[in-house]
Length: 434
Image 1 (cartoon, rainbow, N blue to C red):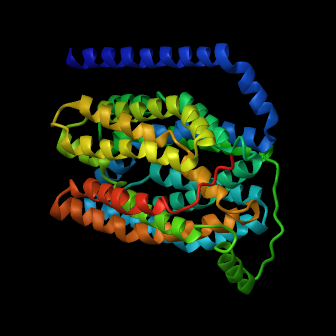
Image 2 (image 1 turned 180 degrees about the vertical axis):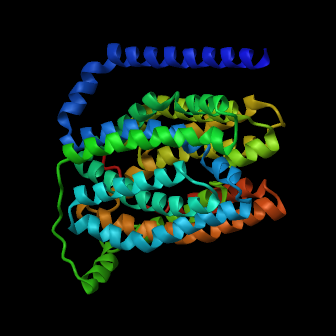
Image 3 (image 1 turned 90 degrees about the vertical axis):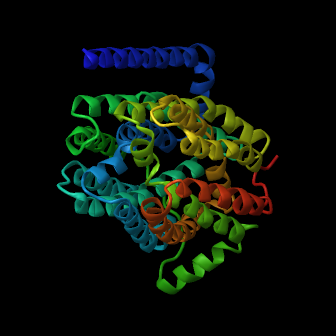
């Protein structure tokens, strides 16, 4: 009887979310469909293709994202091993950051993107068919390579496809549509996990089967629809090294911004593997709560993406970053302070997290710091620094979580971000050209 009640309650929540989704779509249609069509009509084909890919890939990613680290733990990994798995992925990504960044500036971006999508398919397949946590080592390495290639190439194409006056808005629109269509994905994921047996290997595995089929379909669409882009930089090992040194001379504050990015990998890397593991082990969260947390984050992020994008285009990138930062701190503090078996505090924590995740000001600022022809190499340099610092951060995070105090993996990142990163960011020039 209890299971029946839970299922009916969950179906009621899902129905409410679907109604909300339909109402949101209707609201967008009634109030701004003409402006939306006008904006999209002014953008390139590549922006629209990647918009479609972003919407589909976001839904599939949100379906599994909250359960990935729980899945690794259920496959037998300890917190230290979990941190080690993520650290290995970052180390491999660091090795490919510079070559991938250079190739983005000198080679066919479409072909690089296709290679990245093929690697993504392999990564999901290793997750889907994993027999123990050692399989996940390969899956995470491939997943990290996917981020190095697909994520970077998409951002370069989108940045080059949008004008200065529309760039933050374009990013914000993409984020809004991605999250509008994926707002129910975490809850659907939690519901499916519950139906297949709860937080366990066999309960989570079907999510990866669904993700695998979906990513194959959307990758075929992108491969046949995307128009190619080539830049005209020179190749050669000596020229590559000279080119990356040259990156730091084409803009102001680049070294400081790269340092801030590297420190950011410490704050994210130390905590990234553990929030949902922590919520299950110490706060009594079940699969439904984990799903609802993801939906709360996506919902708030979706509602704020366009307003925050317009704010970044009018008041400035740094202004928007500073405005949303306290919500990041509040999300971690609420996670730590939440009483056991009280899911509402966890939902509020992830709603606060959604405020910061709704802003694309950081990415917009990073792309605008350098000219278009240097964006591949610039992201290569920053990715290298980020991945190098993320490796020890994840290992330290695993050690702190398992052997010292799990709360520290959420408190230390707040201290680093608040007292080191944000003051340094103040010295970097604003990139919005008013």
